[in-house]
Length: 171
Ligand code: PNS
Image (cartoon, rainbow, N blue to C red; front, side, top):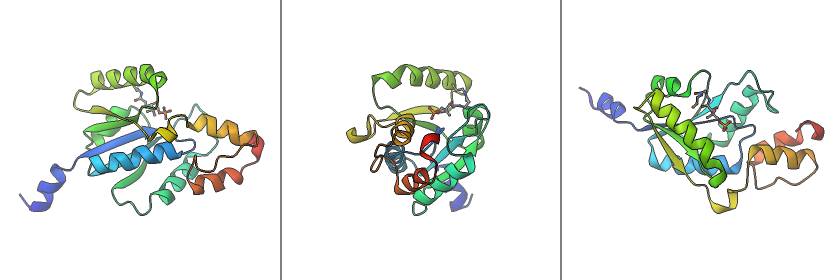
C-alpha cells in the first residue's frame, strides 16, 4: 500500500450540512472550529426544491467559496436526498452541527438519532459557536436586513454585500 492511499484512508472527514440562506458568521465560526478537528470539513448545502430561498443555491455556493477560498481543508458542496447517504458517498465519519442554545437541542437530537438509526457508522458532533454568535440565525439576519437594520458583523462581508444587492423587501 502506498503512503498516499494509507493517508487518504485515515483522513478524517466531516460534513457540515445546512441550508445556509445566507451563511452567517455563526456558521463560519463552526466551520473554522470543525476544520481544526477534522482533516477536511465539507460544507454541504441542501438543495431544497420545496423552499424558496432568498439566495439561489448557485449564489450561496459561490459566496461560501469566496469566504473560504484560502482554507484548503474546507470544501463547499451541495447535496440532495438523505444526508447520511451523502456522508457515506463522501467517506465522512462525522456530521457537524452547531448548538447555540437549549432551544436548538430538541430538533438537533431528533435529527442526530434518526441519522444514527439510518447509518450507525456516522457520528453527529455538536459544536458551540463563540458566545457573540449564539443569537445569530439566517432567519433573523434576513428579517433585520429586510426591515432596514444593520447586519454588519453578523455575516461575512461578501454576504453583506450580496444582501445589499437585493431589494430590501425581498429578504
Ligand atoms: O440549516 P438547516 O435547515 O437547519 O439544515 C437542515 C438539514 C439540511 C441538516 C436537514 O434538513 C437535512 O439533513 N436534510 C437532508 C434530508 C435528510 O437526510 N433528512 C433526514 C434528517 S434526520
